[in-house]
Image 1 (cartoon, rainbow over the protein chains, first blue to last red):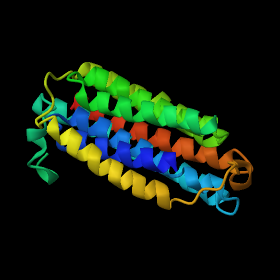
Image 2: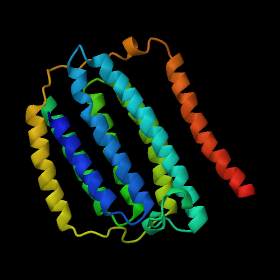
Image 3: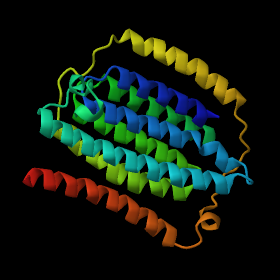
Length: 99
Length: 150
């Protein structure tokens, strides 16, 4: 119960960091906070004996998927800095293949 | 007693998250974010769900968290926020409303169990997952290296 409530609190702060970010490092930090909220929201699975295995499976998939996604984002940040010599969020506004 | 510890860890997690937002330096923001992850892992460890705690500790805090801290230490940015602090109050009030609603409507039985051994009886699948993750990391590194040479 407390865990689910905390998860929503963390998610809200993560969204706030993401919308107020001025550089892409903050976006990365916000995403990691949101993933922490996702991990916390999985806790109720582990209280129901018939859902524990599913909870473990979802946790493993979530951890590896999010880790892979964040690794790609870290690489993208390094590429962005090498191309534009800045990590400011304005440089990413063009988006897509232009980068 | 259990509820007190979980409440304290949860409060710490939210406080560290707010500190991560409030910090003007990316490095300290990343440190606070790692502390949030530690408290989330701590909640799992406190409930005895050690398999998820190990995954969070090794992969998220040990690998991704450290890389984020290193990246944030490299690209420090002064005054990274472009939003009023009043938004924090509004967002937190909304979050509390949603959190109380979700907390009341979440069904949780007392007692936590871990079934990692039923899901993955051998380490082969875990090793396959790690190889895929490492390959992904290496692909990015090789791509950067080849671009650097070109």
